[in-house]
Image (cartoon, rainbow, N blue to C red; front, side):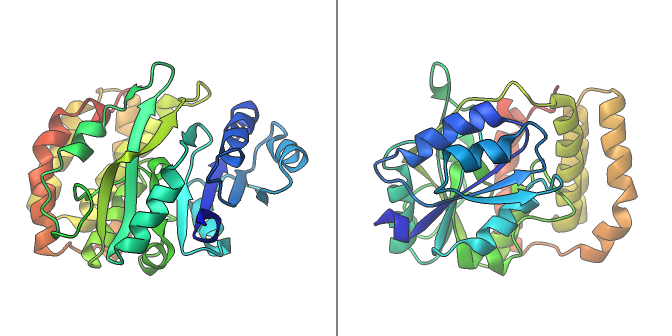
Length: 298
């Protein structure tokens, strides 16, 4: 049974109505799994509404917004070997949780599996799909799908032991592209990640999001990840490409300034990736440069 193998982890903040719809879907799945929800200090009554409508959901009330770190807290509470991250605006489709658990059961070297995202209302493929489907990364013959060096948390299931081995999501990155550093550290530790086309998740993008704030965090965290893990030449090349693609405005300037202020921390924590992982990242640069999913706008 998938309920004995997989726990669904959801984090949320001030999206009560959409979250309740997501929970209704996730608890009604034919292969439903236990759910741990962390409310990141919502001020709209989210936690109380969940407690009243879904008593079976394990609810963790955080008095503050912990960002992606809330997922780490939930994972520590999970009693299953695997966790599936689900955002408050994503819904795993029937069979997807079972498929993820089966793959993780069958392939012990697999740290995570990422599914195919269809964006509502017309259920078109998410723009990042070609990067996953056509990944140029070479993987072992046993890998059940294209090898990845990056994931999207809300579309992915993880082996808890692998997630914990690398420390989960970085507290310093907090939120916004936080998956990239996690994925690189998993690869450096010898774990594999792959994409599964037949594991489907729907995404209904929330209208209550601050895209400008997300852009600032995304640029900052991408730069930090580059500086933390890539060789100097690669980090410089990719940093320049990212800044060329971003609007020349105050938000971008603020992101760069915040990144530079974090340099003492970056230098203390810097650990360059093994050559085999760096070689894979170089192969990915062209597809990332041309991807509509990697535009720093908003």
